[in-house]
Length: 74
Image (cartoon, rainbow, N blue to C red; front, side, top):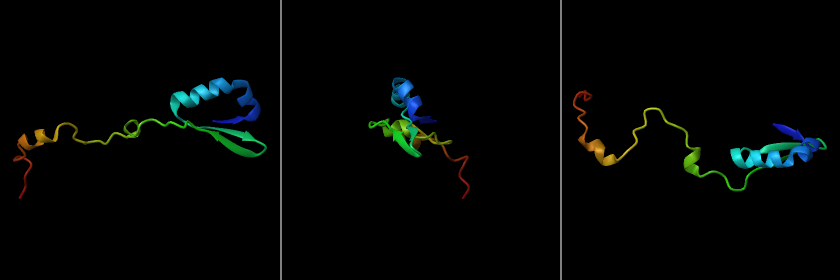
């Protein structure tokens, strides 16, 4: 969402809380130019990871005991 400077002035604390809660930057338009409010501390990289369908997660040592013989096609 893009705020006008007057909207930002009216809702400054609400806007700042939103940026802190979501981590999403907010843009402000003033005099035909745009400014951006961004959080300095972003979320940890692990929280920004996207799910990967079919990804095997867990202990790698458990994989060596799986019977793959039904899948093997020489």
